[in-house]
Image (cartoon, rainbow, N blue to C red; front, side):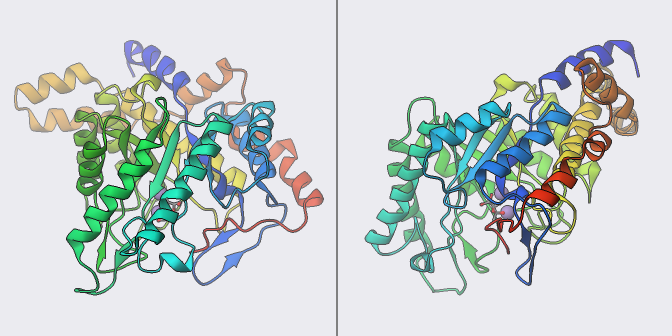
Length: 390
Ligand code: PSV
Ligand code: MN
Ligand code: MN
């Protein structure tokens, strides 16, 4: 590792932040079974307390996304103050359009204007939560879609969606933005109404500058070149955020970087290549995961460390050597530059970074030693279901 790459890498890593999902701290499972864990958070206040532990030991996770109404409280200003007292802040607000019977045939795309109106109004409620908590990101994952050809008119559903999104967009304050997520299947299996990044982008472009795409790494068909999508969205200035997680088969929501650390590196390589790892780029690096088997807090710590490791490797790519090899058509040399960075053990570098920040070099071990897990298992009884059990 050359010294001239190490120093800027350390300073870039010091500025990197990763946002945690509140639902990672509640009980979760699959459509078959939600597993209860001892000591799990019982309400949004305790979810923030657990998330703050991840930040305390990694120094890199200062924000927590909320999901409305899973994280329903009486007083959001009080919840935000609680977060501040814990050294974290509220991040993106996720709306929920997938748990009401009336949304069975659609929410923002529903044929009935009254249903669409209620789905739009739910976002007014989310925007109120954003105002009370200081959040600026409204994240919309649209679960709408159809199961059978002919079930509904595909074109009309897009037109109704565009109209609903316009109404939501009009409610945003000047410093707020929409993060519009896509997913190619599930809960519907013929045609999702926002199945891909192209559809999400088209709606964002129609809406305006305050609408950007959120890329969930688990929402693509197997074999999709996700880093290409990352590059293209960055090129157009419309990559608003990631929902990081790892998948083997479907929307598995496993620990980011666990199934394919090389894919995570390739994604971060495109990010670093365009300078989008810098906070001012506006890309929000969020996790969207559940920990069904493993403990929640260490699971999130491991996830943050995995993102940091992939980022560190991407920062160690010798970009001058890469560009030179690319320009001269030296295929294998160019490939080797990337692989050299990917093969570097960056754990000592990240340990050095953490020690320079007054943290333990190994956040995972530091949390295990802290006794926090034993304390919550003793003190908390009757943990809360994450809400997302399927
Ligand atoms: C459902 O697929 C989902 O996993 C989406 O990725 C959302 O971001 C998340 O749930 C929370 O609503
Ligand atoms: Mn997601
Ligand atoms: Mn998902």
